[in-house]
Amino acid sequence: MIKLSIVIPCYNEAQTLEKCLKRVIDIKNDNMLLEIIIVDDCSTDNSFQIAKNLSNKYPEILIFRHEQNQGKGAALRTGIQNATGDYVVIQDADLEYNPNDLKKLLTPLIENEADVVLGSRFLTGEPHRVLYFWHYMGNKFLTLLSNMFSDLNLTDMECCYKMFRRDIIEKIKMEENRFGIEPELVAKIAKLRPRIFEVGISYTGRTYEEGKKIGVKDGFRALYCIFHYNLPHAPLILQFLVYTLIELSSTFLNASIFIFLDLIGLNINLNIPLSYLFTGIFNYFICIAILFRHKIKWSTQNEIIIYSFVILIGLIVDFGITKILIAYNYDLYSSKGLSYFSGLFFNFWLRRYLVFPSIAVGPWKAQVHK
Image 1 (cartoon, helix red, strand yellow):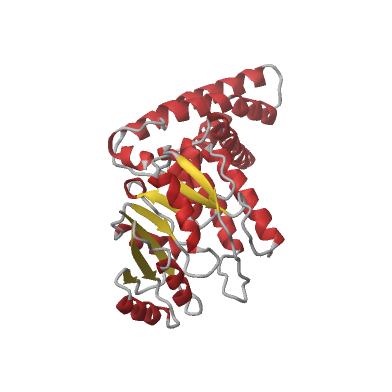
Image 2 (cartoon, one colour):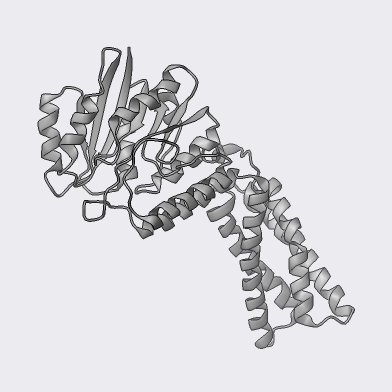
């Protein structure tokens, strides 16, 4: 006998909720207990009342309600925190996904072949409704990008059906409130490196007129989440490529400040260190926000001291190369540009392995590894 916790985030799904729940309850059998956790995310229709009526009829159904609308990710956090089953799965409250497919997802877990099983709308011979071409292309692009940075080979990163052993999902600290929860979960699953399976499922998509909620801004948020949650642990070559983009933006800022200070007549011996200092501060915050770590904390002086040392060494190198090139008759701006680019590899390696090491110590350890 196993117990399956099915977490259903719900927001204004009055038209489909009852039918969805009955389909979920129908998968119960003599070898499986169900725990159906509905999290109503402050629906403005009568979804919550429908859920309450059904919970009075079916003891398997538990209901939680948010007093303010927070999004799918927030609803999942509430549901998963209250799950007690051996396995936990996400089920949308609409009729796009068929709960009968949950049995297929369970098989690799029950047979102890997998720790996490993800559904795929593309890895299947099952029927699926034909809808939006550009949604399909956007999904494939986001999946490809997610795979590049997570080093997985999934076919459908955005699929709702994600099933976990409960001890696995309890290790994941979920942060996203809206649909960014999908790429966030995949990134954090990849970091844990459990045994992951993918199972083909059927799919009956719906149109916006029928209640579909995900939009263009969620696509951009998914891009952000792929970078934000994967990059600190992405393959080194990808980290270097992203750092190169950061360095290019830093170079533009450095050059802009340098030209401005030069135009107002500041002495070059002050101009070079000042422009480099402002650029170093900018680079530090961008590296933390995008590349090396999710959050910044000033709870230790070590990182600030080490980073300041790296900036100082970089400043000496930058200043020295600039002065040497000028002495060899290069013009001022060419000398400055060449000196800054020469520090690209130097800056990346020192930041990656000295300032922001992959294995953090002290108060940041939990944040880096979750």
